Image (cartoon, rainbow, N blue to C red; front, side, top):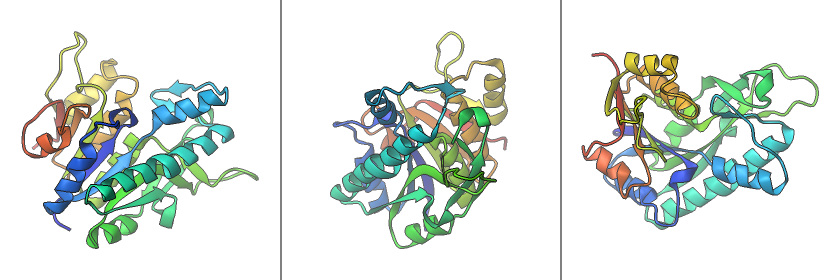
Length: 263
């Protein structure tokens, strides 16, 4: 399959003038095997607001009741996933959309009752991704999973799983060389707001414990640590709003924060 990278696209980084999908199509043509995991949080929040439903987050994860779950699945596995697939194909790439439910690819269980239908990953079956990569597709992954945990009568069979978490689990499961987060911040900053360009896994973990890495950065750091527990050499959190941020990273023009495992 060649060199494999996992790219997590934050919903806030995708716009009319975004160059990320152009970069993905280009990298595919250059022989890279690319797996895309996308979010869609902003659109989910907008859809919920239109229905008069308030959004609550706990440690960066969206509390998901049954109504919210319906919106999450519609937006992630539907609108956002298909728009990304269509755009990559239109740019000359070859992409295929897949959710964690398809082929029981991502299996999860309820994380905490207070979070509702938010899941934690218990197993990743890499076979569907490997099959797509081997025949030349860019798999575009919507982060919903099959609910394989204990279910009471009437409980849904689908779970909402944080896209950052899914990206880390996939990177570890398929032996990705790199995990790259394209987000709407410059990277991880210290308490004075200064960018921290290089961190060890231990230093990143300490930043979470100290509260310096907080909110939505927590699942990103945890995902990096998961990926680094596999064969990944580095995880990078960069500002995906910058033109060709992904291609620049691959070409060695470093920006953002790079987390590396101990040698």
